[in-house]
Image (cartoon, rainbow, N blue to C red; front, side, top):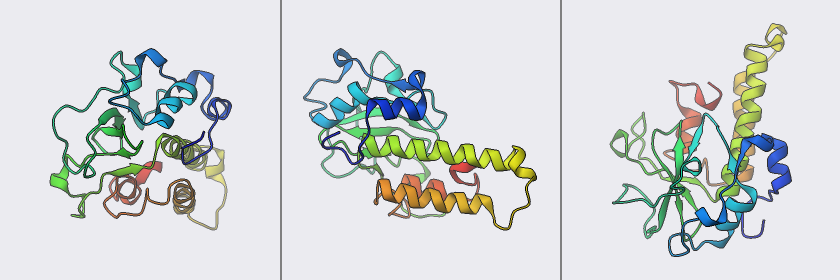
Length: 206
């Protein structure tokens, strides 16, 4: 779609997540243009949609009050980002993912850990460049989670291996995420970077 980071079509979306695994926002439920003037984001939400019922992203698109505006200030959001809409709650970050209505950028405000990650690194709000990059990241995580489950719990787990499958998949995940959005893993305190490096959960693959 024009104006977005990744080329994603409605057909590809349904191929990745299934026809019943996609949430599209009816045009009449879109926020008004004074709150969401970013045209590519408006078109993406109605024509392409986002993954539905994902454990790692609870979308506000499921609610009647879709994409509610942020009321009050949120800490550590990008300077000048005034038209912020709540997109959902990423399970990995324990906070809200917000959509900048002017630019289409996605952020996770640092409202936990006193502005620091588990190891004291200052948090950075940047999540993804736009909705298409978030969508591709969700698909990457889904495919690699499925592959890890195949090795960890499935028949492939009985196979002799000459390498650490978990480390290999994490490395591949970083390569793919970097290709989709070069800035998503750039900052050591960014949401995706702290997720990948989290020593307590094992990262998004568990």
